[in-house]
Length: 143
Image (tube, rainbow, N blue to C red; front, side, top):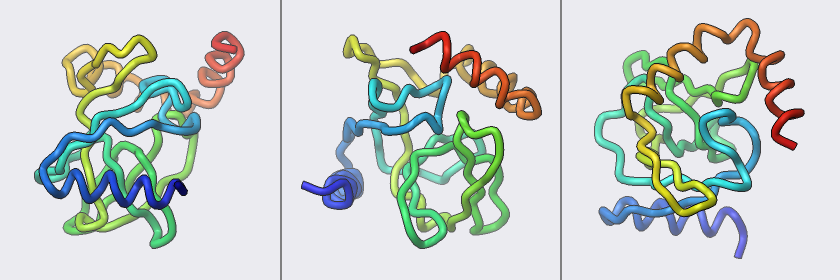
């Protein structure tokens, strides 16, 4: 099965009202989601909001699991927490699912929107100018 088929099936299940546990690849959501080790639980999105972690079809060419950083009318701007620069664009209609929880390697679920986690997200956003250096140290320590 290809990644594309898996993603399409996950979207279909979410659209039918089911929750889907979806593996995350890559480092673009560090330090809040560890790709290759953790998964996210996806659900049908209500009205997307700034701060939501979503599965979205971006730039008309690929799916990403990233955080919404801005909404301008029907236009959505996304950025991975682990990205020191660069954003993606899509429309509200391209947001296919909302991640509600992270599932750790131990199988435990952690709410993506708990007060402590959202405080960490706000602090992390302020640290954007130095995020590259923090992530460099984090990646070396976590090897």
